[in-house]
Amino acid sequence: MKTMITLVACLLSGCIFSEDKPKTVAPNYGTKLILVTGIGNEVYYKPPVTEAEAGSIYRYLRGDLGLFDPAIGGTALQVTKHYSTFQLRFVLRENVVIDDKVITTLRLINGLVSQNAVGGDPVESHLCNNRFETIRIITGG
Image (tube, rainbow, N blue to C red; front, side, top):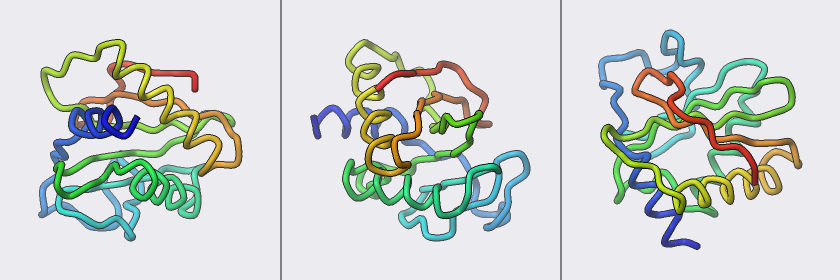
């Protein structure tokens, strides 16, 4: 399982935000989570998601699942919520093909984040372009 999660992390890496952008609020991206570490890693959250919820998701993804690993490269994530469903909006590297193994792994990540970071609330992954516009939604978990 750890190998597939690392593979997915590589596909999601490639943060495109420049260093000259404001460090706390990015237009249309939400509030930047300050506790994020690692070169190129960026996590934003938008209401009604709280800083505590975004932090819990980030800590779980980084600590338990190994995403946001500086050795892999920068990862960009925006956490939003639609009704009770958390949306993990990942910036996808350009020209990446999403196969069944990646979809299965993202569904597993959805379930694990739901159980371990957000108290059982539903979670879905959105694969996005570099402006956090959804390309594909992966539900279930």
